[in-house]
Length: 359
Image (cartoon, helix red, strand yellow):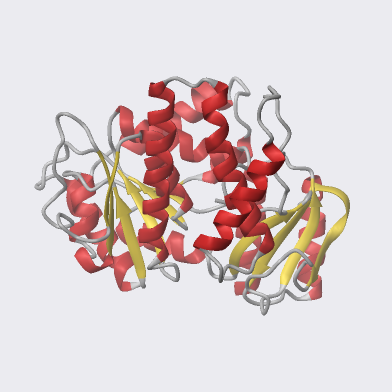
């Protein structure tokens, strides 16, 4: 997920409970945090955990019913455990692969997924899939168990993980789709889509929506299939004929995904996205793009000419880390005050940055 300027969460009560001294409760929570994690030195992190505990306690005087309490409790426990598992591999670059659980192993899509995931692993990436059969299994066969994560969902008709990831410490079981989806995207620096049914389309459109609206960091989305398939041609035709023609999306939104010619082309597209681009974040409306190498002055002038529509005020400029940043401080930055719109054009900006670096 894309990071942003630290914000202090509100502690005000929408529905006050006059019989509860929340100031006293807050002090006791602070004492509990100190008891559990005396070595935690980041004040803002400690504050966030304290407010998480307080929010949980307020559910009781709020009068939430047992079903709501069970949902929130299970969701938080799932997320905490999942983040802990991924945290053991925090320096890994991960790609999430979506696709049908019904794809047979002799299908061209399955073969293409095995080849694609194997090539991504050879390039140093780890693969996240839903841990089932079909495309999900193919995504694990390619890299093997050591370079695979399984993000499984508990369903009455799918009770076990595929034979590659079964029993591995990187297999995580979820009760809820929404917590599972969060891990699929928050832990991925790229997404690969293979043909699938309702679930795959749901995952494809949610990924596109989150990036189109700026709610998720910019990552490459590559669409692949086996030789002779026309699945993604039909998807793109629908996007243009049903959505773009009615102005329900913009022309630049079609830049958010790429239809690869074959597995090799798909790998090339993902790796090219990170040729010079590294990552990005916001500080208020300031979009900070971290790059591996500085651009020439004439290239920066090119960006200002071609992407002026993205700039709310001032110009696109180069510099060092923002005062809010505490990561990747050695990398150069390209920054500007963003309109917070036109994220398809932001994707084109990143492509242009990578192309200028290669020229």
